[in-house]
Amino acid sequence: MSVEGKNRIITTQRLLEMKSKGEKIAMLTAYDFTSARIVDEAGIDIILVGDSAANVMAGHETTLPITLDQMIYHAQSVVRAVKNPMVVVDMPFGTYQGDSKQAVSCAIRIMKESEADALKVEGGQDVIESIRRILSTGIPVMGHLGLTPQSIHKFGTYSVRAREEEEARKLMEDAKSLEEAGCFAIVLEKIPAELGAKVASSVKIPVIGIGAGGGVDGQVLVMHDMLGLNKEFSPRFLRRYHDIRSEMLKAFRSYISDVKSGDFPNEQEQY
Ligand code: KIV
Image (cartoon, rainbow, N blue to C red; front, side):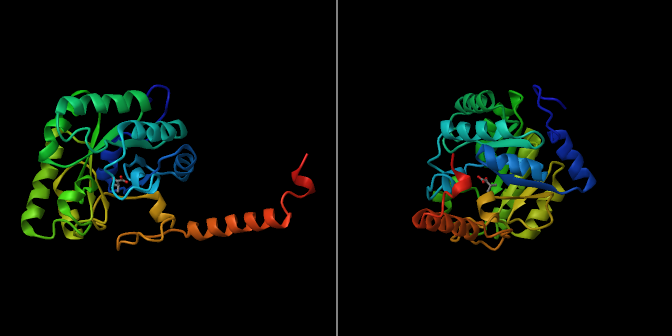
């Protein structure tokens, strides 16, 4: 499908087809032009402009402080870079939890100003009115259940959610509500693998997990975490694919040493 001159290969239709064929969906976060271009070249299906930008880009403790303008700035940088993947943007805290009219105007701002493909919203029945209104404008919405970091002050901890029967039952109901409302996919964060698989087999839309086990339809990780840029963050679900932090340290130290010693720039590196 061609969307305003861009040929995004991954659409909501394609994701449904992937689920029905049992093809796993790979999703990663990106927040800037340069890294989004590399992730696209690698062949990712979905890029999430996550509000985890508040943590990994801006150094906040939680995702709550990031603003709508800041999310739009990150989304614009990513959209400028990518050709093939679907670009999904997180609606930041405070833009949809209260008034569903405000939710629609914030959603429209993100879509108009960034030209992204879809939005992600945390929560189930609590925010279903906002989700329905956003969907009614034609904007695709991805849900997010389980550990929803925008509610961290309610949870009080980043530990595994829905271990107890009552919370697991509620999560299952929320997933059904999101599907019925018309969401095109759901992210499940940090829940038992058995529950993740149960949700994925109970809904027709793709379920993408982060710490939700291997029985779901796809996986998502935060780019900075999987590249090994953060030493401090090491939950059980995180597989580190590189130790970029050490590589960067080595490069920066070599540069500093070359500048101090006068080795840089050499004859070929000047005019
Ligand atoms: O903001 C984010 O990066 C996310 C992922 C953890 C799913 O929501």
